[in-house]
Amino acid sequence: MISEKNLAGSADFTFDYFGNGGFIGCICPDCKSEVKLQIEIYKSGKLVEHLKELFNQSLIDELLERKIIHLKDEKISHHNRLEKYILWNMDALYELISCIGCENAFISIFGMDELQPGREEVQFKGIWKLIS
Ligand SMILES: [Zn+2]
Image (cartoon, rainbow, N blue to C red; front, side, top):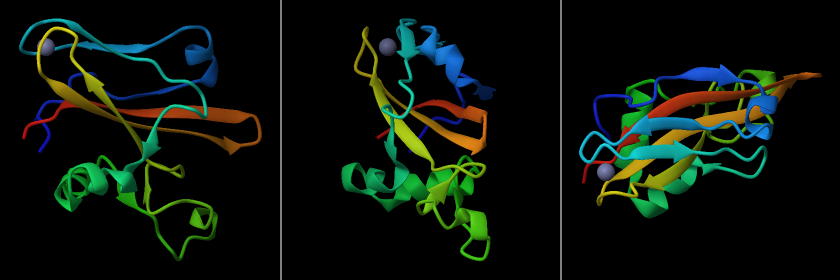
């Protein structure tokens, strides 16, 4: 399960933001350490589908139910190039983050793609605490 609260909010970013050393941060709700997510363009993140190997399908189902991710629509032609789980017109990716101050683990969900020629975007959906 993931925490009710999204610790980092959600926002869209340009690729330049991360290329220039930008990162996304939030505070561990338990030990108050800073939790940092750095995104390397086209390197960071694994497909959300692989979460079922680490946890099980229930975590993916929870992300779907909370509308953090969506299933791709086979009937929409520009979804053809996408994997099973998507954000808005891009694959949904995740990164796990360990707290540097306590045992907590967090999951972040984001995607990155060129939506149209010249319009590259990171869709960042948030950071949640993993609850076992
Ligand atoms: Zn902590």
